[in-house]
Image (cartoon, helix red, strand yellow):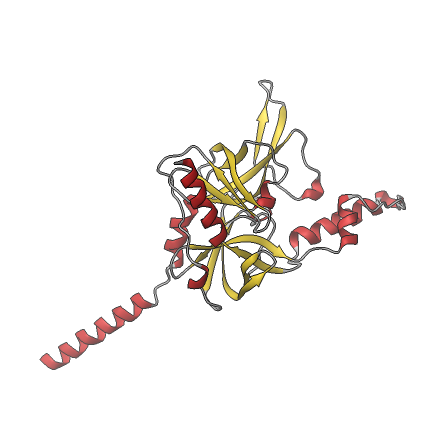
Length: 280
């Protein structure tokens, strides 16, 4: 009887060890990372056209209740130090006036100044006036191998809610922007600038650059209006130009035209350390 109890205890111990080994770390990792992920906002005095497909996430009104400004999510960023350094993609803040408007997970909007940018590696470092902020730590590009599981947190399609996706590193190596990762998961407009997080370590190893692949130059020309379209079919209220613009916008925003793609954070980590040293 005693031997049987010992065997049973050993079996239960081995089972507990096996369960702990294969326990899913993702929910806890998401809960830890989300407070450090922010939205990069853009304000406009006129509402964007319907084909922009971006939801209004905030409004400024007059005392009479008239809307005089609209707020949209332009991309994602993440806090990398307790004193408020923020990393995002350079193309997310291009043409945005300073101070950059940053929406915190709590909904608070804070101004940020641009500390440094890199067109070569498509990153930007911003600075918020914060103390004791939740932040994410960088990991090394070499710590990740093809086949590793990763998560990325962001604001796809300009939604204000933080959305987490899980994927796998399907390729990693040298690209136009330096060391980079290809993902087997869908990355959409609005995810740009968000953190790619290695599930093993919980560290940020990549800066999401949304999808890699674009519409053809001709379709881009139709979308931005540089390709003139003079023929309209007015019967039944149908406008060919409006229709084609809507279709090309929909394709660009809602169809995965290329692979999920992220740039190694080793470049921004180096630049951030320089910025901190210069501050001292």
